[in-house]
Every structure is written in structure tokens, then in C-alpha cells.
Length: 353
Ligand code: NAP
Image (tube, rainbow, N blue to C red; front, top):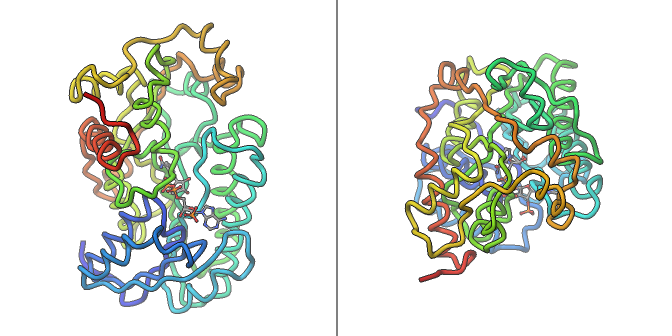
């Protein structure tokens, strides 16, 4: 895709796992990126972006902005035609107060960014990074749809601050974005709804929930088995590509599910065993649901979560992204292997054998 804007593009949450690839692809195209980070003093968290900028024709400018500070995004947005709002906490189990740590930054953050958009007359297109979590709350929801396959027409109506709070943070933030878009006519909105993102990170500093899953595979937590849970997967470079297309293609419209295919946790373990051998404690069997229910509270999940998510096939239809954005999905089995290898190389997973 060729450069299609002379104006800078704003990317929020620039230190993030996915944002790294989005910014890299924008800089490789020679575009100017205004990138916001929560704390400009944490230079290690964005050094990789500065290194990428040095090697490419695009220009990078960094700004400080916290999602919870009103007006924080105004300066970074000056002169931008396109805003890509990615910043949002991605925590699946590692949190104490879901409202403070997940829901407020997601919803109020989206509101703050879009209030800045409303004050910035140059902005014409906003891309919000939502999630497949905006289309369903629990895997059991997919029992009600043909072939257990969800598409962009579905909305998550079952998550709350108490049950599946990360999912709730995503659907509530996306709804807020559409509500604010409909209230005006200057800027349009495109939502990117990725599945679980895997594949190499541009920095070992990432704390994305994506790393949490593979880390558990490496640490031995899943050695004695995994629940029968389906996970829709997609490579991080395809997710970045989808963001660029959503930002730059004039005809991009509405929501886009970005997903390559679903694998069960056991199938993911088998993919990794085939490549790395048996020296790593990858899961080799499914744990019966009643046993998962017993241990769930000790590993950060509720029994209700297990009841509504274990044993239900879950698939996503990403045809709209293929037809309208031209996404050519990578094989996620290779992405899983590359990602796990990187966690070993970075010392995040202990090297064995
Ligand atoms: P990540 O690496 O954890 O990135 C999250 C980003 O949000 C970080 O840059 C973080 O900044 C920023 N952030 C969090 N709270 C903030 C606050 N109060 N103020 C300013 N910035 C804040 O996660 P990711 O996987 O790249 O996720 C990026 C986006 O994609 C999120 O919206 C996530 O929900 C969505 N998504 C991710 C996946 C996935 O599988 N990874 C799937 C679907 C959707 P700090 O560095 O300062 O913490």
C-alpha cells in the first residue's frame, strides 16, 4: 500500500505489543507518526521505536498522554488527519480492581481521545482497536449462532465489571466510540476487532496479555492438562496490516474481525511440542471440566467462567477483512512457534534441554 496522507498519524499506546508493529509499518511507508506513551521518562519502553525510526524514511514524534487525563491527547493530535487509538489495558487475570485497572482507562480513555478528536478539525478518520471480545462474552454464546461462528453483526451483551471485565472494557469502549461518532459528521470510525494476537514482539519489554498465555505454556502451569477452550488466533503483523488498511483505505467501513483460525489450547500445545520437542512442559491432555472448576479460583478464574467457556467450540468469520481490506492471513502455527522461540531468546521463558 502506498503512502496516502501527507499529515501525521496519531497512534496512542505506542509502547504496546501491537502498536510497535503498526508504528514500524507506518514508518516503513515514510509516514509521520505522532506516538503517545504514558510516561516519557520510561525511555526503555519506547527505545525500539526510536531505533526503527532511525532506519526508515518516516518520522517519529513522541508525546506523553495518560488515558485518564482530560485534554492529554490534544497536543499530539495537532495537524493529524488519522487517529489510531490502541491504548487500553490488556489484562486477563493479573488485576485486583477491574474498574480502576481495566474499565475506567478503556471507557474514559476512549472518551478523552475522541473529545480531543472533536476539538481537532484536521481529523477525518479514527481507527479504534477493539477486540473479538466485543462480539461475545463467553464461548457458550457461540452455541446460538450458525456453525459456532461469530461475525461483525454480533455484540457482547453478557460481560460486566464482575464477570469477564476485560471483555466488558472492550465492548463498552467500542460502544462509546460508535456513540460519539454518530453524534457528529466530520470524522468516520473504523473498528479493528482482533482475535488473540501472537507472533514476535519488537521489544522484550511487552506486558501484553498475549505473552501471558505462552508464558504459562513455558512455565509448566499447563503441564498436567488444559481446559478444552478454543482460542481464535492471529499474527501480530496481520493485525498491524489491518490497522494500516483501516486507517488509509477510503472505503474501509464499520467493524472488522481480524482472525486467522481457532485452535484449542491442547492443539496449541501440540503445535509447540512438534517444534520444540518434549523438553518443554507443553500441555498433552485436556483436563476434565469438573477438575478445572475446582482449581479455577486458584489460577485467577471464576467457576462461572469455567462453566460458560470450557467445552464450547468458538470460531470467527473474518471474510469481511479479506474482501474489503485485502488481509492475507499468515499461518498462526508458525507465529506461535516464532513467538515462543522469542520468549526463550529474551529469557522470559526458561531455556530447557
Ligand atoms: P499492550 O502491549 O499491553 O499495550 C497496551 C498499551 O496501552 C500500552 O502501550 C500501555 O502503556 C497503554 N496503556 C494502558 N493503560 C494506559 C493509560 N492509563 N494511559 C496511557 N496508556 C495506557 O497490549 P496489546 O496486546 O498491544 O494491546 C493493544 C490493544 O489491542 C488494546 O486495546 C487491546 O485491548 C487490543 N487487543 C489486543 C489483543 C491481543 O491479543 N494482544 C487482542 C485484541 C485486542 P504502558 O506501556 O504505559 O503500560
